[in-house]
Image (cartoon, rainbow, N blue to C red; front, side, top):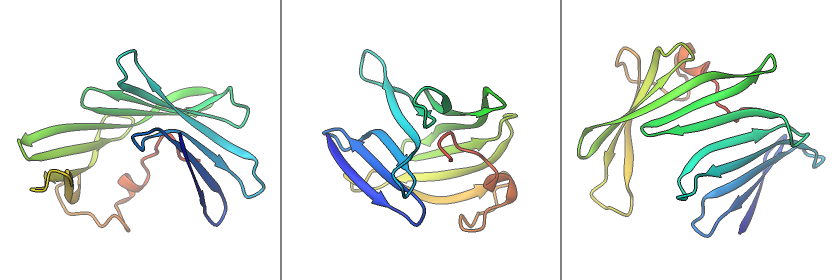
Length: 157
């Protein structure tokens, strides 16, 4: 297990990575080393990642979760004592070298999408070629439309 510590202006992030460099646990601390949240990865018996689960500082309360599906993921957050769907991602192949990932709100409405192309250099993999709003207009990720900006992820703290 490899440990990486990242320090930001108002929190610290400790990543525990396996031998493949994949984070198995992500611990978020305030600057006084108090736990804010603790995220762990869950795998099935075949070694496939099925979920990321975020625990509150009590290490018991689940405050967020990402469930992986065959073609994307579903993000849940603790809202009024209940885990509620806040975002869905669905990916599809448009052709053998082009993929599209759609981002949907908690009502299942498309908010935006990303197009990625397979790079000719196989070691690089997929490269994003653009982010688009639900109407197909290119988005500036530094100033996205409100609908896209308001999407919540399971691990936002």
